Amino acid sequence: MSEHAGNRWYKCDLHLHSTASRCYLDKEDTPKDWVDRAIEQGLSAIAVTDHNNYLGIGAIMEAGKAEGLAVFPGTEITCDSTKIHILVIFDTDKREETVRDFLIRCDIDSEHFGDPDGTGMSVFEVCEIAKKRGALVIAAHIDEFNSISSMNPANLERLFDGGYIDAVQVTNVPVWRQYEADKDEEAMNRVLAEKYGADATPQEIDRWRKCYNRAKAAGLPMLAFSDNPRSANESKHGLWGIGSVYTWIQMDDVVNLESIRQSLVVPESRIRMVFDSVSEPRTEPDFWIRSLEIRKTGLNPYSPIHFDFNPQLNCIIGGKGSGKSAAIRILSGIYQQFLDPIVARTYSYQNDFYRRFSDDNKGVFQ
Image 1 (cartoon, rainbow, N blue to C red):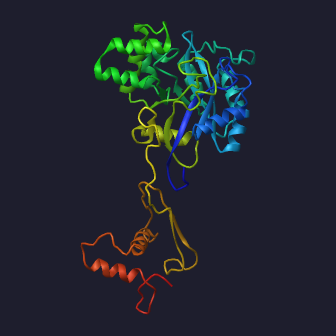
Image 2 (image 1 turned 90 degrees about the vertical axis):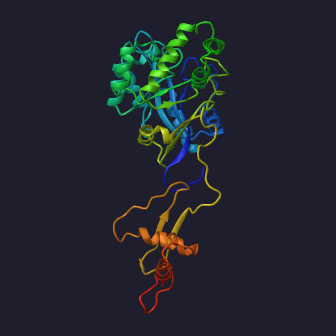
Image 3 (image 1 turned 30 degrees about the vertical axis):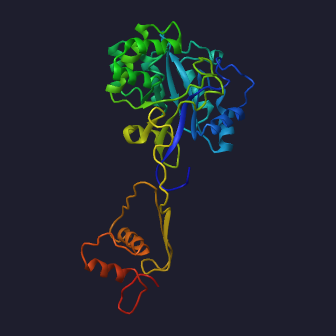
């Protein structure tokens, strides 16, 4: 991905398990193996979200730093008696201790880190604790098992409208879209039963679909992540699935939670799930101006004037005399064309501007 001013697209998988999750089978995998797989898959930002645990984060953050991979520390916490999973993700400048302290605050003590039971606290309590600590909160895989789909409609509405979560992770988007197109309930149930087994009853599938539709109607940002299965359709975790499902997020050159939050404000333009875009949503044009530097001019004879550009939309903002028009007129001069050819005298103004300074006080170049 080329370096340039402004936002760019990052390939992100923010639901990943390491060997610290009990259901990660290949315990001999090293943090380097793990990070190498993420790099191999083209990921540029990931989150470590082990089940009710934090112990795998530190080593992966170190390995990721060496490879230029942005790593968010987090956890997938199990809430309530219904075992609902919530992704809690902290900023890239935090460390595993931040996740440990969060788990302890949620009544998971050191003896029970990694236990599948998690906390007896409600989803609402857990989300409130996470929010107070500045975390990003995502309802995990809302359209499959161990999700908020088990909540009653009133509590779902409270969760969606009360600011408890920032986004939802969705898993079976192609299935729901196909059902919307053909209304073939039998085909929908068959596909998901093949994926999940006998426990995916028609009643369970109906709950998943309705939860997805409610989240969509509520306008919540939808994200897709892999949950890194060990192999296709397997519930255990491993290297194979890292980056197999992902979301493109448009962020600034500083990858942090604030960048993600800004993208979630306008998901229609800054979020693209793999279901909608396998490759980078917008590619760079064949030819574009990366930057403009102007030296030895009457505009500022003491130091160069420098502009950085983005391959997409560029807006030049500044006060009177800051050089907005000058930048455009310099570019026009480079290409020997002016942007407004309708008025004939415009050419005269441009020619007087884009030439060496002379006794007639015209021209900007020394």
